[in-house]
Length: 354
Image (cartoon, rainbow, N blue to C red; front, side, top):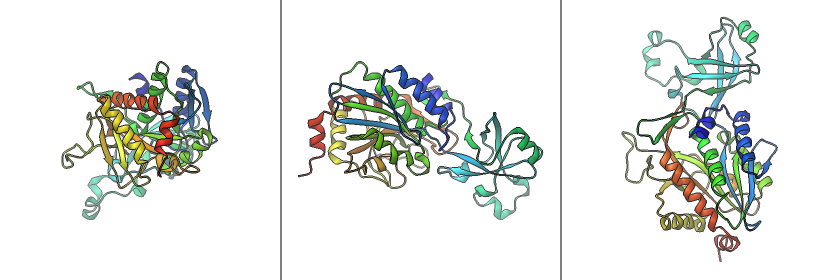
């Protein structure tokens, strides 16, 4: 789990993914693969098996939700704007890292004290545009002396921890350092397992602000099949339980529907068959809001059969989230078995519609 801890504690909001990219680059170099990048910053490791084709892409994304400094007030407070989707109610009193060029500053997201709020203000979700970040400065001049500028990225703070059940992982940025971790683990496993294709494992940039790296990465990777490795929403807490809801510890998620893609049905069914053959537990995810990089991958050129495989996560798009270690292990098992069966003939079957 040390690798996942390092990935989650690295700071990388959209457009500022350098720390995470450096970890990915270091880990990919260890695996003796050809490193492939695009001009936005996405990074992959390419490994040829017994055949150059098909080209199978497995992609997480480097970025996490965060913020950017937009204003420095006369009193030395920082106004900010979100990078990615946030619900205002999860922000107040949370610690953040403000990443200036010379050093990193700890701040806290603040607002007017509840003691002086009007009755009307107490009964509504406090708006983000009235919040600020307090870094302990006394004036805008002091903030400038410290080197904090408009445009600096702001990253949530939450240390990595494995809970007492020895399975539940608590950390920031599991959306989507989980995808980065899965890509690296699959590539590591394939060092000892034969595969009849070329695999390209890595991660894109700027997914949380519009799937932007997913637009450019396929031009560099040129996939024949693509898997987006991401998290789904766990609905196993009080008030949201249901028999068909995603739960921690019940197996990796296979996404049947989201707002950006209906997956290739033959590919989807093949993955389910492989999971059942190898007795790998899995869950089905349908999500009418939100999407993943696969929403762009499957539209590349003439079309690329694509699927989202990931794990259920609690509390995503906040400072903290939870996933199951057992789900991660089973997701790696499933992905490895899928890659091992994807030869040219199988891809022809997947793309044959008549």
